[in-house]
Image 1 (spheres, helix red, strand yellow):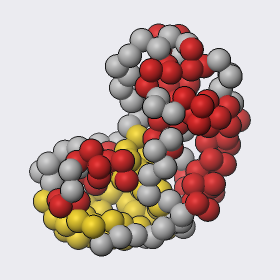
Image 2: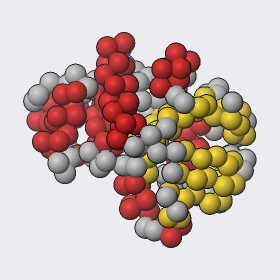
Image 3: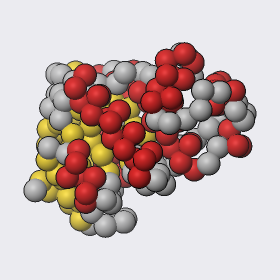
Image 4: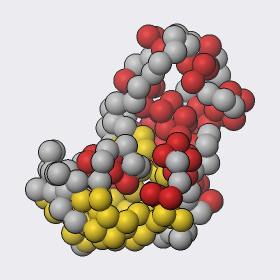
Length: 196
């Protein structure tokens, strides 16, 4: 379980909530309200104060790379640092299987990154996270650029992660997606996080 107490940043007012294993919580609010800031703070990518724990382990007591393998953030626009897709994956066979489940071609690992569409990059960024088998997924608009079929595939994979016991915090502007996936909702407005 992810436990958050008084998490705050210069943008985010102190926020407290929990995310249980196998639970999906949708994070909603207007653009610029602080949703991405919340996810980045949870992942220890931006400076924050407050206490964040995963199954009793405090974020501040472990190296940031280890925390981020357990609590993994997928940005709306992920970075790519190598020329070829496959170079971004330590386990290319598992990555290729996950990519196939998301409707990507079997040879995608051999593609140059420059060939990828926005939607293909977004799905592969999710694959990059899933290969690590994190305990918590922090997803920032994971289906924003995707068509209905690709969105359905992503949601099916996320449901499988929930069954596996992962917790999912998903920022989405699509109310229907929140209804399909989420057990609870967090709303962010002017940096204030509320449940409901």
